[in-house]
Structure formats: structure tokens, C-alpha cells
Image 1 (cartoon, rainbow, N blue to C red):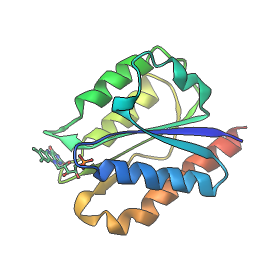
Image 2: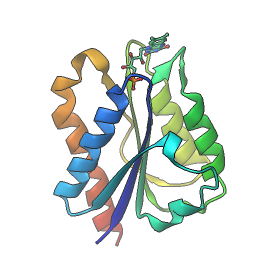
Image 3: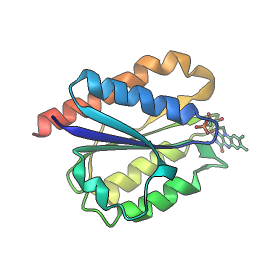
Length: 148
Ligand SMILES: Cc1cc2nc3c(=O)[nH]c(=O)nc-3n(C[C@H](O)[C@H](O)[C@H](O)COP(=O)(O)O)c2cc1C
């Protein structure tokens, strides 16, 4: 079975909820998905090699991703993620820069095989976003299945 990892950075847990829904969507398509808070993960980045798909998310604060996700991205650069399936997501209030920044880093620096775009969900509309988040997970898992 293919393996996916969904990592989130959050302050008030909206991005955690999106992460859980993305993982559900991945499981619907037969991908074994783990969900981790970025604060639980070490900084060596090496363990990322074990996964077929990696999906990273952060809430946006003051126009940026959270510092913990920035630190994680620098650590992840040490892993060879080229060609692995990737996605990016995050909860936001009005401008939502973080998911796009994460997506661009995964695409340009890590050279990952990215989903069609980043998933941004406005916290106020999160309930309506359940389907969107699950569908994003499905898209990622289908990409993994297609790449195998
Ligand atoms: C101090 C503060 C600054 C924020 N800055 C931004 C911002 O620059 N752009 C934006 O889209 N949302 C901003 N937000 C809204 C958060 O992104 C939004 O509440 C989001 O749901 C938080 O996600 P989380 O629960 O995963 O931490 C800000 C919220 C706070 C409290």
C-alpha cells in the first residue's frame, strides 16, 4: 500500500482539521495516510524518504506561513523528495499566502510532482470545505496510484 504523510502548522487548529480531512480523502483512495503536527517532527527531514506522497500545510499569519513550517521546509531540503507526489494547504482569513508559498517551495526547490494547485480554505467557511479537503486528498492519492 502506498504511504502518505500530511504535516500541518497551526495556532488555532483550523489547519489541523483540514489536514485530517485531506488524510481521510487519501485513505478513501487506498493510500495509508498519517497526520502529524510539525512540532512533533524532528528537524533531520530524513524520515520523509519513507513516504510516496507528502502534503504540507500552514495557516497564514501576518502574510506568512508559521515559523515552524519554514524551519521544517529548510530541514526537508536535506531529503531527496524529487518526483514524489506533493500538495500544500492551509486555513486563512483574508490573504492566505502560506499554502502558495509552501507549494512553490515543494515545486521549485524539492522538484516534487505537485497537485494541480494549493488548497486554501477560509476558516469561516471550513464546514463547507469538508468536501474540498477530502477531494484534495483523493487527488493526491490518485496521483500516487498513477505514478506507480
Ligand atoms: C494575528 C493574526 C494575524 C493574521 N494574519 C493573517 C494574514 O495575514 N492573512 C490571512 O489570510 N489570515 C490571517 N489571519 C487569519 C488566520 O489565518 C485564520 O484565523 C486561520 O484560520 C488560522 O488557522 P489556524 O487555526 O490553523 O491557526 C490572522 C489571524 C491572526 C489572529
